[in-house]
Image 1 (cartoon, rainbow, N blue to C red):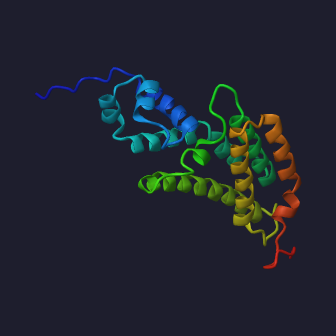
Image 2 (cartoon, rainbow, N blue to C red; image 1 turned 60 degrees about the vertical axis):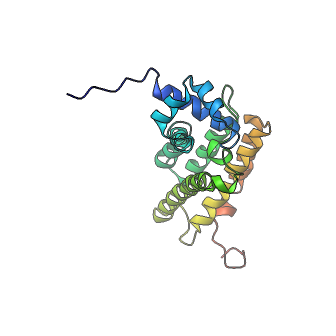
Image 3 (cartoon, rainbow, N blue to C red; image 1 turned 120 degrees about the vertical axis):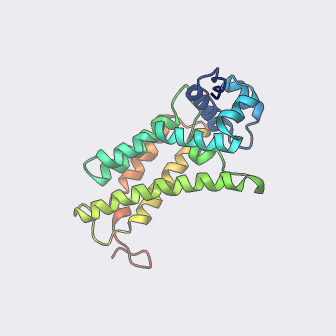
Length: 209
């Protein structure tokens, strides 16, 4: 009869959350293995045994971030009655999360691997994939609004999603630079004030169709 492996002496979920916070605050390349093991309260052999590698740990941390801090976006896009309300809810929730106390500022998916050496290009590309997925999710909600008659038939849903995604990413950088939730809410106010102009179909030259 085979003997069982020695059980882990740490809470994997809690350790993963602490790793997520370190990556969120410091970014992938600036985070050392010593930073991680210290924050997670485990030794390097345990980290490798549980998570495989720093890159694999980072990928799990990103997925955790999306499932927790990013969950409100998924709910808003699915549950709000109109596309306009859904987009505004996403922006307001991000303003709250990005500038919240007791957590790193800004968005982990936007900030944690913006600049990477060629050796870590797969990490940068991994986050770019997550960012595109968020924009695509918003575009699908806008497409539903077109199908339901809320938005005009010629609405460029990809362009509208790209615009509001750009606002979200800019808010993340502003939060990292010290912007408060009130500051970010002013940005949301202006972004939503532009809603009608943003969703109006345009011809190839940028003129409303």
